[in-house]
Image 1: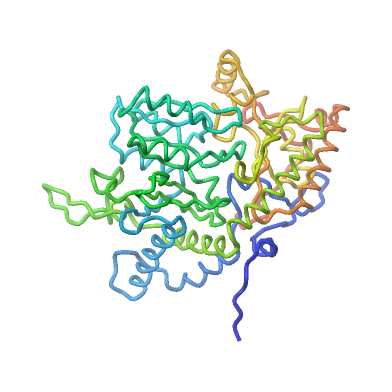
Image 2: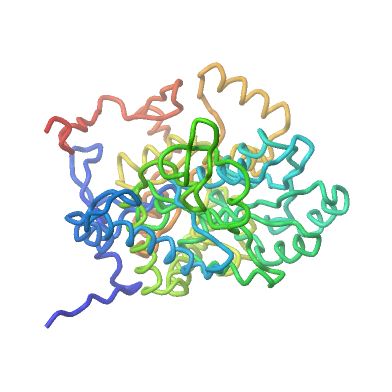
Length: 475
């Protein structure tokens, strides 16, 4: 008899490909790796890979062929659209899912499709990833929403901006959860405020969707989410997939920013008749594998239960912060006394006094097998804000970077949890931090590592890795 595997928050570490793989460290030994860089990309789930492997014999063109495999692939690709919309409880009559490469492409697509004019206004915030800031700057006038004492978006300031600019505001767009601090914004309160004035909202769901439930809600609900962008590579399906969800009517009007195969109904030398969305917005042969990977990863997340994931990851986050704040050498960049499961996902930024963030990240990797992220996390204005840099300091930093000199460029170290991380991994990390603090007092690491000023990265002296030994470069 065939028994279907049951995936739970307790057994999911067994089904993460590459979890705790052994990697080389500085003393020529092999050590079990620990991945605390999940806010960048998550590893792939074993059942996602198995699902892809089961499909590959049937792989064929989509929306193009009459053969059986082509028809099957088309049915599956269209079904994936439906399943993604269902995961976020969108409206099947009014909304569509457009598959993209990632959240960045999704937000850029929306910036084109809203037909913004130079005098139009989009409200975004200083806590955004560059992907939810830069696309808007090129299309219209951008105003930045301020933060409150808790570090999330200030509803009073948003209301003041609405009163000031009125109907000129065409969109309010903001991150569901920060990729720097993990702080969760009050999505539904902002939606209700915006809709009271006839303004749609867009939520960058890249950092929120893998960790909390996002319900788009019915269109007649004042808390409805108009647009939602997401990335598969944050949701344990890192195969070049992502999506933009929004009203069909938005994508029916105007021309797509990309055009070509699959985007039209009919073309002559004189005219073009566009296809209905989402086909109109998905130019060229689609990433079928990415679509089915995202669909399957969502199946697994739903089976485990987003609430179970949220509670597990918050337990990890609370444990880590409670330990880190006991070290006087550690700088934490958030209001750690008012955190709750409703206000934060598992992202913790920090620094160690007297040590460069890039040096700490290098030590953790080369000596302890721990992967973290360091730098400004594609959110430079937010980092400047959190570090309380003056305009002059920001100017000097930028001037230095433009000269390709990354010596002492500011930044932080970021820990970000996935649903598979465990308390014992944090304990190993805390042991590493304690040793780093102790050894740094003896200038131990300054003699052991060197800085590449052109990249800002630190490397161990007299040590290198032959990466071609670890993968099939020459096969």
